[in-house]
Image (cartoon, rainbow, N blue to C red; front, side, top):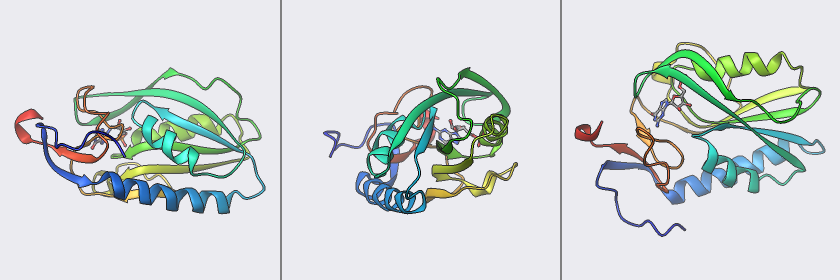
Amino acid sequence: MSNIDYLDYRIDKVLITEEQIKERIKELGKQITKDFKGKELTVVSILRGSFLFTADLCRSIDLDQKLDFMAVSSYGNATKSSGVVKVEKDLAESITGKNVLIIEDIIDTGLTLSHVLKLLKTREPASIKICVLCNKPSNLQQHVSVDYCGFTIGDEFVVGYGLDHKGYLRNLPYIGIVKPEYQ
Ligand code: 5GP
């Protein structure tokens, strides 16, 4: 458990508690372990939003695994993606012939992940699966086939557990909604 047990003053309400996140990650880890049994996994964590999710999820996957990171940014305003994605940091190793599991924080329009997926497919991995912490289907513009989803949420801007608001609040142990006056 984290030592942050107060509600941050900028948070309106907690949408998903630390306990709920932990429970769901255990379930996802079990399912992924089962589905990839006998295979080696290359976990590709999309920075920065998925750093905590990746750290917890990879420890609940009981498989031989390599971990790599890709940092992407999508141009847009504070709370909306434009779909123009820039790779700021590419993977350190080749994924050709590997069983890749992409770990992403959230799908909103789907534009970022579909761009990343298209790019990684050109490198000819053996397989690519996608695991997202949160999926917001109401804003979807580009369909992305999600294999593992932590939580399906409504059309709300969420923060915490890796997700930021103007760079802040990533360290909150829960997922919450920011008060309108701070948005
Ligand atoms: P998409 O391209 O699917 O619209 O958005 C992808 C990126 O936008 C996510 O990886 C995330 O960085 C950011 N994003 C989308 N929705 C939210 C949200 O509700 N909260 C936060 N903090 N970031 C979001």
